[in-house]
Length: 386
Image (tube, rainbow, N blue to C red; front, side):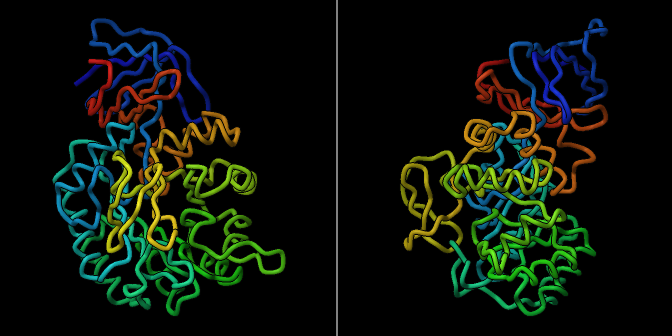
């Protein structure tokens, strides 16, 4: 299918293009123009709206009452449809610490669902959070299923689903961590540092071995001290690390978020939601993997008070970064599109609006409310428009 999109403003990766015209052909952006030189082609007129690159959530557990750990097609499809309705065009389905056979089943389901396809946001792969974490900073992960690192089990899982797994969390202080990190890197899988009590030296050793992501920075990790910089000090000071950030202004205070921004720059911050099954639903009791979660005023916590993911929408993370931290909208949008596309290993085909990439768009009004979501050139959600 060949058609045009006209937009009032289009957020390219390095500038905002006014009155842009985009030729879409079979789900791909074929041309980007500043005036309409095309004739007799069907046109979608979005001149009263802003055209963003499709948003990508690389760390999300669930939504709408469904969880990645359900390990069935319907759950991932419903999560996908919910995400499409809030402007997300791609996501990594994220597991939690659980019995190894349940994690394996969840990953298998992600692999199968990727092949079947979903109705909303595109499923880009699996993100394994746990069980190779530490007790002290476990957060909302059950102690009884935290495991020692078993490189053989991990290799077996990866060999079964070689194109599915995109990121695996490893606590660098655990025995066998560096071997696992090197193996993951050799398979083009992101070794991610999180739920860890690692010292500065242990983190740097992990980064030297190939670790490249800090899981929801400041949360689930050893804090900063001026004599022992700890995990936080290492990830903020090493330019090789990209920091995940839950920008709900609850997980990380706006003032501390500004520190992260100054230390890392927008090119090394990936906005995530860490959303759990309560996303899009009312306050109440829910589950996150094996644990009961209580959601009050949209904030998710387990019984001991620890935060248990969030109910955040990625578009609201963008707004928060602009309103509370002073980040430009262009930079904030890139943190939720281009940077996560790089993490998911798909930045060569999506994550920005440019010729040759997928026609994945998030359409918003002047207040950045989502009005349309387009995936592979197909409208999967429309609030006001036909």
